[in-house]
Length: 170
Image (cartoon, rainbow, N blue to C red; front, side, top):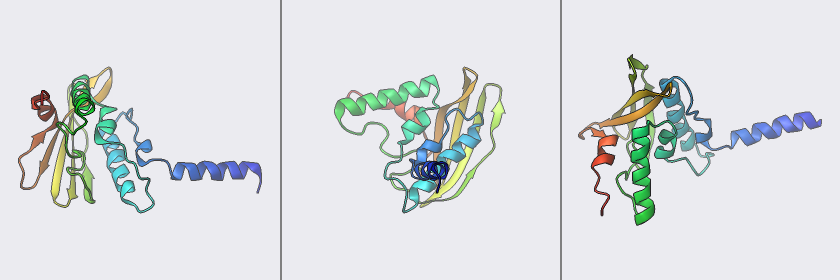
């Protein structure tokens, strides 16, 4: 086998074992495509040969967060660093749980109204759920401004409100 074929095979092997989140592009212009990438990375992480580490939901969403939501994520992360405990977010809001077994994932189309937009993702994670991602246009790009999680049998939760209302003085 020549050196060129070996290099191509080595590159393919390295790409196949790269972390699942590495394939999520925060600069993807269409938020619906970006969200498909995120949910696909969770599916890949479920596979037996998947890498052990999947980036946290705040890292993935934070890479595309609005200035407001990014500040709220930072405030929560600072609380966790300072207290060495979990603060406002004690579950993965992308899949609505600490564990996941996703099925029936459907990413809706981008719905635009001026400088605001939404994408609804429905899925089953042990029960039917939906996440409504609110986007705002900042610096010419769609940024996640809030996420409303809705799961059967529970009241909806707005992530930005939860982060704003959390008592960080504990």
